[in-house]
Length: 88
Image 1 (cartoon, rainbow, N blue to C red):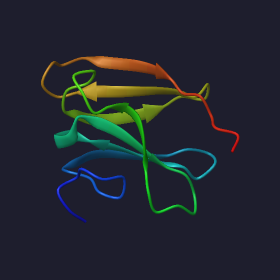
Image 2: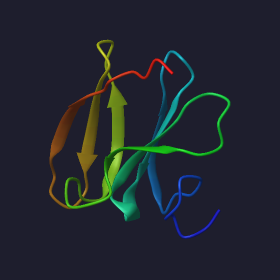
Image 3: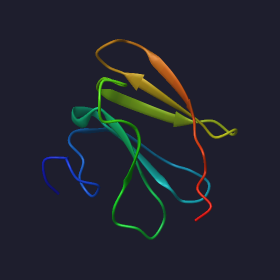
């Protein structure tokens, strides 16, 4: 949709998963972020990144406890993030 700077864009998406509620998560590699799109929305929200927190995320996974795992291409690391589910 564009250069990957807005909530409805991605720049070199490197991974995609869908959780049990239908929320889509995308590893936006060139923008150094993970975005989340709840079902029935067309704008994503930032989950993690957008700064130096993660570098070139290329893979993502969720476990049954709601933990998000992010693989970084440049640093060869795997990060674990505890997600907080919004009730709104």
